[in-house]
Length: 279
Ligand SMILES: NC(=O)c1ccc[n+]([C@@H]2O[C@H](COP(=O)([O-])OP(=O)(O)OC[C@H]3O[C@@H](n4cnc5c(N)ncnc54)[C@H](OP(=O)(O)O)[C@@H]3O)[C@@H](O)[C@H]2O)c1
Image (cartoon, rainbow, N blue to C red; front, side):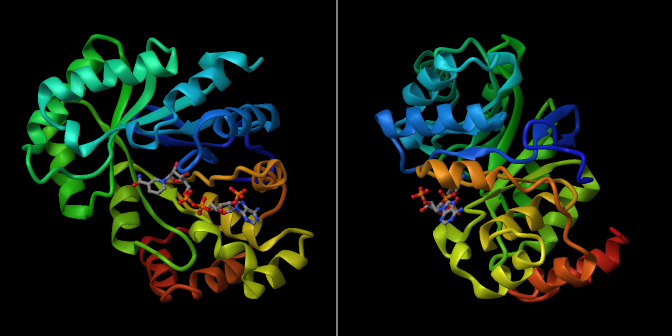
């Protein structure tokens, strides 16, 4: 990803899906707070919005999309089926309810929020594929799936599993999962990319940022979107955070800086980069 891209244009290409590399997370925001934050995000250029049945904010997200001057077709909307709704009828019914709440006829990506202990994965994925067949869902994916479960999901689904949304940030690497995603054309969508607010206060990231006039949070987000197949979905209620988090496409971390951020975790990321020959 070069420095010529922007929050509106940088994408991860994953088996037929073009997923904007920086999306907007909405967990723990509801009502007006959520609507205003999503409206602001669309205004400053985000084109990927992440919600879930669990977040109780699909209506607010939908209101923001409806109020925005940005064309709905230019926004990549993601929602997630709650694991309690993993049985076939519940997938179908709950997703239709999600669509009603969002005020949309189609979502760009429907994820299974987490593996279900109760319902066989083939049943859930087959219902998600059915929703694709009827045009309610463009792409399907999963969330919180370790490598073996992701591999199984890819075997069971009739259509590509284009994304696995997992916790991934400078203190929490998933090298085996990243390797799998790079090899199999799956987007690794990094949730809690700012470690739920811990990253912005990190002096070591701040020092790297000083070289570019960027903050610690911006360095962490840049580190994420600069990796192959990785998208990031920071959440922010504060308008200033919404805006500055999007401003990570006009600088590039050099290999030593990429490694330095990775070393805040356990260093295994650097080994993977060499192994895959990613640079
Ligand atoms: N699939 C899953 O199971 C799963 C799990 C967790 C999260 N997610 C998704 O991932 C999204 C992001 O993860 P997250 O909400 O857990 O955490 P996060 O994005 O890592 O961190 C959000 C926190 O960081 C603060 N923040 C944001 N930008 C900042 C900045 N530039 N400077 C200082 N502080 C900043 C926010 O404050 P303010 O809000 O006050 O601005 C908020 O407290 C969620 O919203 C959700 O969409 C998915």
